[in-house]
Structure formats: structure tokens, C-alpha cells
Image 1 (cartoon, rainbow, N blue to C red):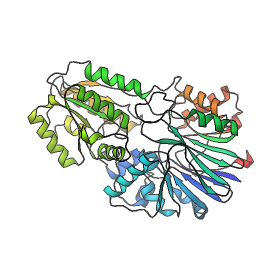
Image 2: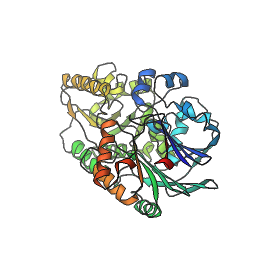
Image 3: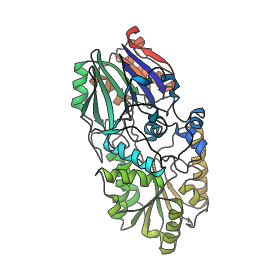
Length: 448
């Protein structure tokens, strides 16, 4: 018997959580936040940060998955598996994992981020944390084995999860890209994907976020060169350089650091979330930022640091700050609105090494921020970025490799689910083998 319960992340982006039942064993994959709802409830200063708050408040506000639908399965849970360190996959673990008597399996970087979150917020979990690298396998029961498959994404040590069962492989494949030239980390494990494709994939969960984009997702190495061209190819003598990006994008932070130092400027990382992810990356040996960058974690310290830099000479620094989505409490917004002692002037430069996440709050916040920056005469550079998610042609290649019998779209809204269905039909799939689920629904594969 194989049953799948869509707990969160179906028909939406965020709150990712899926329960997979194989006979009398259940595996929970991902426990994530819905970030816009979470920020609305907590008024979080940074998009990639969390704070201690009541679990029931978060559940009622649709900020975390509603796992009440798993009450009957709770005694059967053998493992909790966050696939990577983004908060829309990991951020609900501090609130929900303690409800289950099961260990947490994740990569070393994801474990380090989780530890930093728990330490910062003085939260504790009873669950044992077991670290596994890409390529590792663990037996969860007599009939169920789990394998981690390394894949590049926009944060390090992301994995696709393969559950090996007697009825075929269940493949959980969200948040990855076919990046053959990553700046940090491993290339896609094509050998593992082809091997399991030959062995027999019963069903794959598939990231549909960009299924309607007729393209291949560019490599992170392309963004590194775009940053080089932007930071080194523009006259910035005597001017401030401020860069904002996703704090979890460790490869991007490394590129910003490298090119900033090439300009003979000191590099500052300002903010809780960038500090949290940077220290986690150092802890597992991915980078050594602390020897080359000054990391300032807390808001009061960051404000003092900005005042010092303004006095000493802002042309001597590259600042990396929060605010890539225009979050009202972020440091970049405070700078733009003159709420901190760091005045902007004509031809100072602000680089957005990111895309706007296409929700109305994000888009309106970013417009307001850019208007404030333009009013100060600042030069703005946008979209110096490549996604961490597969586009349509990556999805096509992936399906050719793993050859699943069934496909479950996830991590996307309705129109992207339709685009993934269209792609599957193009590739010869019967539409009845593409299963569109909604949060709380159960799919019994024996009835398909």
C-alpha cells in the first residue's frame, strides 16, 4: 500500500510538507513556512529569518502546514526529511517536528542552519538530527530505504529524496536546477538519476514553479559573471555600493565578496539572516567568510556600523544588506527612507541580485523601495540573478532521465500545474497519470 497525503505546498508556493505512507511506515518530507503569511503575522524584519511564536497562531494564519490531517498516521512516522535549508521547506520544523517521535534526516548544511535557528530563538526539539550527504542511503524499516541525491539549488547541499520500496521508487524532486557549473557544491548527480530511472520510478513529485518558461535555467556561474560586469564594469569611484540578495544564497554571497575585494573595498554582511546562513556554511566547511568579511548580525550593531562607514567613507566598502523584496522593516528600506545614519546620494549604486517573488505584497514593496532610491538619485541595477528552480526544458530532461509512471506537480500555483501537465502530455504521458493535489488530500496509488 502506498498513500500520499498533501499536507502543504500544493496549489501554492510555500508551506511545503508531504506525508508518504508505505504499508505501516510514514516519511514526512519538508516542513516549511508560507513566508508572506509568516511575515504578516510576525512582522519579521528579514524574509529569511524566524522568531519564536505560538504554533497555533501560525497554523490559523496559514503560515505553517496544518498537519492535523496526519493524526491517524502520527504513530507510524519513521523520519522527518527537510530537503534543504530554505525556510519554505525547513522553517516549520521548530514548530512541528516535536509532534512526532522520529529523527530528522538532512544534509550537514541544513542541520547547521536548523541548529542556528534553534539557538537564536532559544527553542528546543526532542528529535535526534541525523546528517547524511548526497549519495548516502539509510534503511528506515525492513521494507523502506531512503537515498539522498545531490542537486544544485540556490542554497547548498540540496537533495532529491528517493524512497526505495518493493513497488518502485518514490522520488521527491522539488527545488533543484540542472547546473553543470555551480559556484559552490556538486553538479547534478546524473548517474543516480539515470540509475533509478532504469530501476523504475513509480511516482515523482515535481517542482512546477517555472514549468511555463520555455527555457533552461542559467547556471549560477553566469550570475557570477554578471555580478563581475556590474561591480567592476561600472564607474563607482567615490560612490556607495550596496548589494541585496537572498541570505541563503551562499554562492552568490561568495561572488559578491570576491568582486568587492577585487575593487579593494572592504565587504560587510549586515543582518541576522545573512549571518545565520554564513555561519552555517562556515561550520560545515563550505566557505570561510569570517576571515575576509565583517559579519554584523543584530540590528543595533548594524546601525552603528552604517554610521561608522558613512563617517569613514562609504566608497571604501561594499555593503550586503537585507531588503531584496522591499520588506518594510529591512535594512535597505531603512537606508532608503533615511531611518539610519547612512545618507544616499546621486550615483550611489544599489544592486538587486534577485528577482521579485511575484506576489502583490512583494511587488508593491519593491516598487515603493525603488521609488525611494530613485528620489535620492541612486543608480539601480536589477535582476542580476538566476533561479534555483527548473524551467520547462530542465523538466523535460529530468523526466527523460527518471521516466516516472506517475507525476505529482507541487511548489506551484494552478497555471503552472497546467503547464506541467501540458509538458507531460507532450512527452507521451496519459493525463490520468498526472495527479493535481490540494492541501489535505490523499492519493492512493493502488487506485490509479
